Length: 198
Image (cartoon, rainbow, N blue to C red; front, side, top):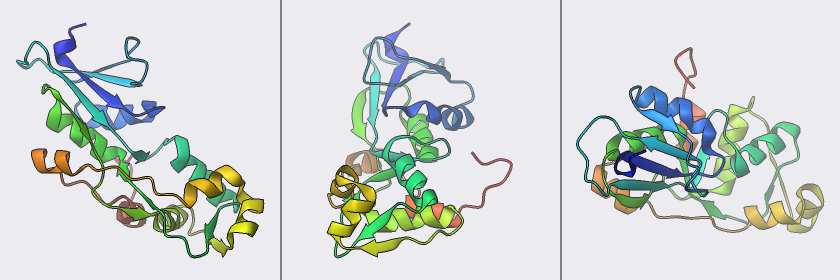
């Protein structure tokens, strides 16, 4: 396979991105990347002229979308079960991007050579993200607890996660490619899913 036409998405457990990318770029071949263990998806370029050393790398923060994995899915599971809580007086922040915008980023950069972080450009509070997920999950209610009680409900590792910042900076990519992604929390609250939606 010609590495000159390869784009890597650094998104552990990111196989759920495939249908989003296939819809955005129906002529793009999607393959696994056995030679790059850190990249779960390798996107092979279209039949367009590219430099011989071209390899674009897109590094993603937490990705939200149908079939999502990792911490966003853990949040959703806990919210659905009623075992997620907000922590009193905590405003920790997190960087996110929606899978639809990862696919757009692939379209914007395929065939080029560089490395970027991509985000939705917002510093969401973890509280706001959880509430947006709860809205999507039948408008579930999330209670707020003091740290000691929260630790008993959600465990030490989850408590540590939701009281710490998890931020990355995608401004360079947004500026370079005029990237205008969806605000993930607004998307969760307002997107109307239909037969065409993923």
